[in-house]
Image (tube, rainbow, N blue to C red; front, side, top):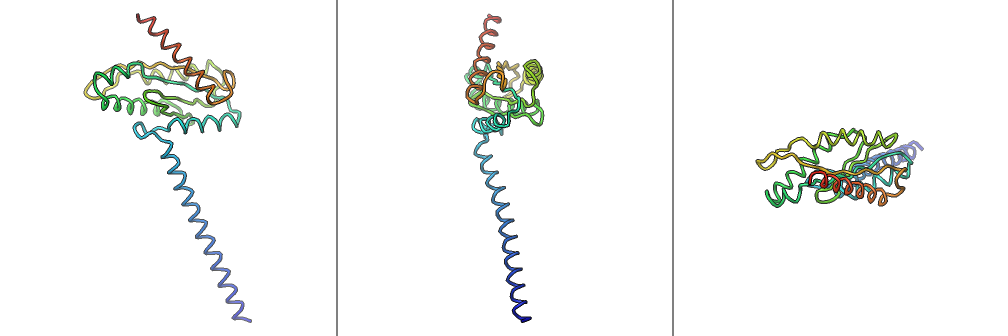
Length: 195
């Protein structure tokens, strides 16, 4: 009887140890899975999340019914810089803008590189359009300082547009289209004013 009890305890302990080991292994696998998922949704050049990560973030916020704003940004002089200084300098500029954007936003905001010279910021917990515009202006002021890249110093112009959830639109794509259209309106206005 004592032998049967010892065998039962040994088997029980082996099962517990096995489950603990598997649990730890599963936790480690989940951490690695998350890491690779984030790497797949991260822009290598700027080390920012990419468009897919932005869409995921916005969809989560929409489902949670949290008020937020999307700021769509475009580097106005990017094509000229790429043409004059070359793609390496243009890539350096993108990396610098990405770093400045990360440094300019609050910890709970979200910055992503959408494509080429376009970025987006998700401003969380905005009360209204005026607050969103104030935060957008603060970020803009930190971005437009002179930038040194490829041995050159330039003041980079950035156009931006804003969309507010739920005031302007209710889906990811509609919000992005609204912010993009707003950005192009501002870009055209700025071009008319400087002409």
